[in-house]
Image (cartoon, rainbow over all chains, first blue to last red; front, side):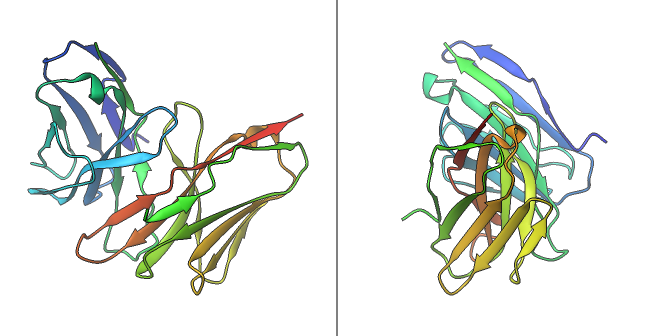
Amino acid sequence: NAGVTQTPKFRILKIGQSMTLQCTQDMNHNYMYWYRQDPGMGLKLIYYSVGAGITDKGEVPNGYNVSRSTTEDFPLRLELAAPSQTSVYFCASRLDGQGFNQPQHFGDGTRLSIL
Amino acid sequence: RKEVEQDPGPFNVPEGATVAFNCTYSNSASQSFFWYRQDCRKEPKLLMSVYSSGNEDGRFTAQLNRASQYISLLIRDSKLSDSATYLCVTYQVGSTLGRLYFGRGTQLTVWP
């Protein structure tokens, strides 16, 4: 069972470089999320999507962009990498509309370092 | 004020001990509640949902007090493998659909 798949698992970027973190889920979930987690800290929501073509900002969207062209994929783009974006990034998905007690399913995470 | 507040710990307990975590939430419109477990450098994983009447899953018991807006997790007969960070999560329906709010987590270490 694939669930939520994130690629790459690790990446080192130079300041100013760009990259896309990939996230795909095979559970036909309508909601998808991107979080970052800094060492010793909680999860912070970057962006989320309630369905294909619909995205919205979370708590910390600056420096990131997202798109949701299909139900399965929700890539996160960093345009000009900065050291402050060094973090672990988690993608998650959730099925909404089937009752409120639906948990999120997380990918394994992408560990990103900006040097 | 944060949406979800947890005592960060750490809680250090011996094997076999009973330990309890509390979590408070600020928005009375919160409708669903969960406890997640996160191991070091790993993704959060669902431990259990929290139902209004309280629920139990083996050694784990979750309770919800809507009047006081807090959620609790009780772990009985602690095992070494219970060492992790426990995240309290609430779900709200409002102007921002489908939002879950995560607490910072409570760190538990079980020692032999």
